[in-house]
Image 1 (cartoon, rainbow, N blue to C red):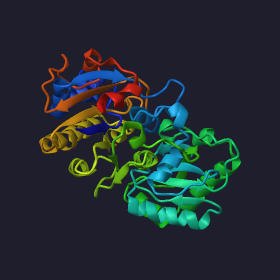
Image 2 (cartoon, helix red, strand yellow; image 1 turned 135 degrees about the vertical axis):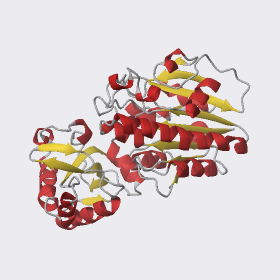
Image 3 (cartoon, one colour; image 1 turned 90 degrees about the horizontal axis):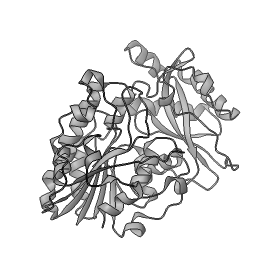
Image 4 (cartoon, one colour; image 1 turned 90 degrees about the vertical axis):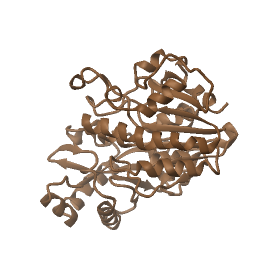
Length: 392
């Protein structure tokens, strides 16, 4: 038996008036997820504990059966692991966004989805001119900043930039004075950089400041093999998800052209997932695009991202299942990212599990969406049971 988990980041949403009071999932054409729902069984599960912030770090750990209240130490160190950055026990790693600010407002958490090539040049400039910090270039606007030997028992609190769009960023600057000055100094360095002058002429958002958030120290978790008895792999363009995989000693599979955005290599993710199952028994495939579209408040883009995920990832994986012999497939979002609020929320998310080929009659659910899944045989499932249901 092979075990496949397919996650469309942030697919779940509220009803949207312009879609006839449907959600993006309901409005999208998703024959392949519908097939999994109709062939298997559905339910809903809460991936975010009440007392923790809504995000993919918390949600993915929960989905994989690792209690985030026990194991989570911050987003930054997971992303650092995803970049292959070595951390010692007293190092603090932060997620470091390149952002766009205008006056005193933060207007774009992604600097217009700046290219990795442009971002790398800006990160090199910051490393040259900011003392006592290490910044590691990532994909697009997503980077890692490490403060060595800085942990004194407390992690400075920082607001995620996607939670403060349009707001005065000064009111969200960290109380830690060193971090505050680091952020403000970065604006002085980046504002007039040649890359930003060029982007401004082209009508693009400037990457004119960094924003630090998600700080934490290196986590210690039992391996996926220890927990479930199977070897596995992770496929994602996002360092955070790769870092979770690396922390669990899963194989990280890099897919050419995987961007973490709407232009990602969907087909490549499916192809590499099937290839990885020739060597391993488990694979998690994560696609960021629906979440990015929702953060931008773009309904049409979110529907397109969901449809691309369904056709090019879920569909191609289903087409390859006969070559695997037998497979059990889980499909789900990790959390809600409603277009109306443009950030993550904590409602229980839908999921469907099917075994192929199967003589199972499934349940009464025929389509995959937030409301149909509530009527499924799995009901409201505790998230800690999800992987046990998949790998049993």
